[in-house]
Amino acid sequence: MNRYRQLLKNNPIVRRLTLIQLISYFGTWFSNVAIYTLLVQMDVSASIIALVAALHFLPGVIQAPFTGVLIDRFAPKVLMLILLATELIATLTLLLVTDVSMLWLLYLLVMIRMSAASFYFTVEMSLLPRILDDESLEDANTLHSMIWSFSYTFGMAISGLVVAFIGPYAAILLDAVFFMFSFTLLWMLLFEVKSSTKQNDFVRQFIDGLSYLKKQPKVTALLFLHAFMGFTAVDTLVVLLAKDYYVAVLSVPLAIGLIHAMRALALVIGPMLLAKYINMNTLFYLLLFQGLAFMSWSFYIEDFYYSLLLSLMVGFAITTLWAYTYTLVQIHTDEAYYGRIISYNDVLFLGVSAITSYGIGYLYDEGMSLTMITQLLGLAFFIAALYYVRIHKKYFSQEGQDV
Image (cartoon, rainbow, N blue to C red; front, top):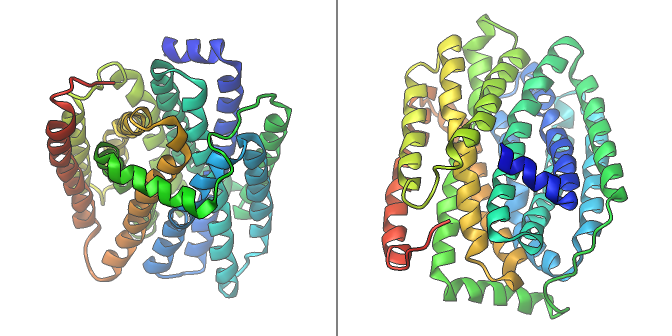
């Protein structure tokens, strides 16, 4: 942890952005349990739950090719302020969703919230390589990933308690407070980073970004490698487990919250132990471990207490895998293309996340057990390990490159 403390101590901009990131990302996921609890109370099908989960990732897929060009054209601070304000307004509007007839509004607001959150994420991830060297960038990415993962799971864990004891609408109001605080902190932060490209034609910049990928097959391969991390989007799985199996032990929001709390613990502890060991030679084994973690979870997934324990194993390597594969993309991308390449990276990662989220509910409605679905997630990481062997041999083994 000392390396992360030094990064925050020596870089005041990163320190403030990290605090804003912690609060805003926490807010992004905090009201999710409230949303899923409302859906369970409305007694909707697994496919609708899965659709809502998928809508948390789908906006990033649709908008990413365009946001990348915008990021390369405009200074980041203004974009980030607009995006936080958008999340705040959309969160408050969730209070209008009171019954099944308002599902259309819920879909719309989830998409707006996550469009803004995804855009904000891409802006920040394209900003970091512009203000940090490679070594600090890897530390910042790992710290960023820890915060994202922690906020993603711990936000829903705390929200589970709030929803269980106070109610879903109280959680939504508290969520709005988080965004107000984040907006204020960013407004007060003084920094200036100029756009990385001239104001060229929008379409020409978009095509130029695609041409760059065609000329850089190594970067393209790394984008596909990082996309495998999208198979860890198991919100739908957790909700269905709580709804169908764990409700006999705890209420739905508490069960969801506790599972995510255990995952949050693993997502934070994991990189503290693994960060100094991860490199291009050990990445293969970590991908294998992730596959084995899902397989182990699948055998005991219907038992709440065993599932709670094994969710630690499932979350242990995710943060490190996400941060390291993201760093590989960043350091092999030329600065002029940061925004566009990071946005294309989001298209693939969020696309896989959306397909995973919806696919879990669809397969369950079609009769596949949650055990088998979890095993499919494990299989995906075995395939990722084999894919990494292939691209490492093709692009890196002769160059002696490492991070």
